[in-house]
Length: 306
Ligand SMILES: C[S@@+](CC[C@H](N)C(=O)[O-])C[C@H]1O[C@@H](n2cnc3c(N)ncnc32)[C@H](O)[C@@H]1O
Image (cartoon, rainbow, N blue to C red):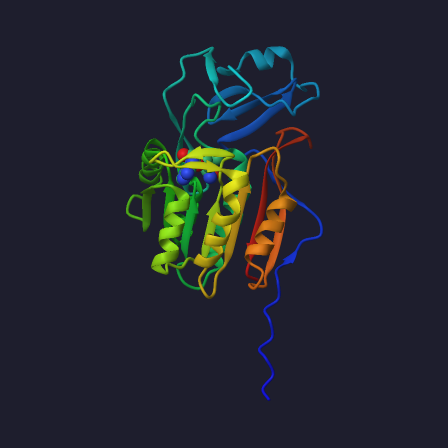
């Protein structure tokens, strides 16, 4: 009697967390932190923003902090508030990371239309795409202003970028043009991430790499409600079904406080139980320009086929 085929091994989950550190680059620096705030440089513009976890004392003088061009003053515990300008800031200005150029902007939600700590993920994504034998198909869900999509496109991928916000997709397309990637194979889709994945599963679509960076709470363009704790498991299992026969990776990132890299790794381990490979997990951190002090900002788990 023939022996049954061996069951594929579950992914090996790393025993220890990994801190993915982002230091300064030409267009970004974490100049200082402390007193519940960060002092950062985005291109030529220096800004301060609330960061309650920075419980230590700032290293730089109060004069250095007061010279910032703009300070974000929160209106509530959430992300909303307003920027107090100490100099006439432009509506947007360009920043570059490696071959990708994007516009920084002072948004009403304390962000600058880019998350600099993601540079550690961009470097990893670029390496994974370049390591593929042929141009991989990459799906980027909750893609916002498109930097990860453009990093993958610049590395040779065909990208499907999905975000619920028409404005964010518009900014992402502008960033593609700024990066000289307007003609690159990127499909820009304004759609609810869950609906899009369900449709792709029905269509039998396949991707070599998938990126997801879901917020804690969000809304699709048709008002569809997204809640991380309720909706992430189904979305991740939909993504697992979309992986090609010879996939490369699945990268999951989350900014929510009540989550951890280990929790995200557990979820990926379940969804990819028959895929082998390995899962690394941990957090993304920005490192101060002078010194070893860092600020952890988001959690990640990433599955690699090999
Ligand atoms: C945390 S940001 C993602 C950051 C991005 N990955 C980056 O590194 O720049 C969250 C994004 O999710 C989008 N979003 C929220 N709810 C959504 C939904 N139901 N479907 C698709 N996108 C959604 C928002 O418009 C926003 O652009």
